[in-house]
Amino acid sequence: MGPIRIVWYMQRYHDIKTSGATVYRVCKRHGLNRLPNRVGRRAVHTHRYEKRVPGHRVQLDGKVERSHRTDKEEFYQLLTYRDDVDLEKKLAAWEGFYNYDRPHGAHSGKTPYEVLREKLR
Image (cartoon, helix red, strand yellow):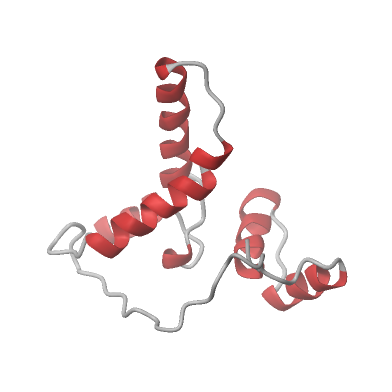
């Protein structure tokens, strides 16, 4: 988690407003300012775009692959389950959290549901 995402979580769940620079300084002071060695940085930044109407001619490849990566890193790697029924319950809870509670970088800290509601107004 980077400083900006920490800022979003602190504001959303603890009603604490602070800057990304402050969070970075605190993390650095505690030795948490470096990415793990296995994480690389992107050399080329992709051009993001939106359509006025949700679902209208959207490119799905880059968004689905990114969603799969998030699922892998934040759900499946932390998963312990006993059977398929247990997995289905946990997956349903994860999808609810992902769509309604988890701040997204692509939406400047808003959830997908919040962005959809704004677009449909």
